[in-house]
Length: 321
Image (cartoon, rainbow, N blue to C red):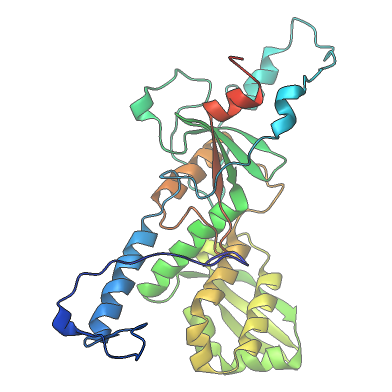
């Protein structure tokens, strides 16, 4: 999926037996017709699908890092004194880099793996993962990481949304999405049409890992939700999904919009802004991005990460000039 206003552009060079191509399909010879159209279509579809599936985060930056202002060379920044004493508390540094912190319990959404902390002994260049190791979290939205090339900036919600989306697609391809029963069923107030949709598309909801039961004219009861959505705002999630079911008022259209529904589920299951992550959780997110197909972009086509090389940073600070 591409972001709004962006369109794909590519050139294909195909080598075929001339007998398999009809060059007289158009009087001006501006178009040709393949005699085995389905064969050519399937070949192109499979090739593009495999190529796009390998665009994992860390292989190449999805977009170029923003160019620094040209006026930077003429601007000499002046920094006021910070008023810090020489004997700064070492515990402050330890709390930032996780040195003196007890390992926090991992969240249900992320499964951290053991990774060297940013202040530990520097690993060799060939041991540094593509997205590097997490350094800090910025305003509860971005993850800052250091890799062999320089600085990596990750949109944690967009990245986790893609990871969850690909997991949901894999589960659906293998059967129904894994779900869990709520200890206390939740009642949600909805419109009459949405309550009707909960009854009419009961089987379709179950395939998404959601079990609903009508409990009134304008209310439904939530009994089961997908395991990956543990901790999400269940009421808001069900309202959004019900609204899409009302919009796609036939089972055929629902099948065509299956990926849109999974995208909605993934969005609700992803970490939100201002959610503070521990260093192990941030490193786990980076490792999952590297292992997930199409993780260079979120479900809406926006980039999930950008790279600033040391050369970019040196130009910003006019080092070597």
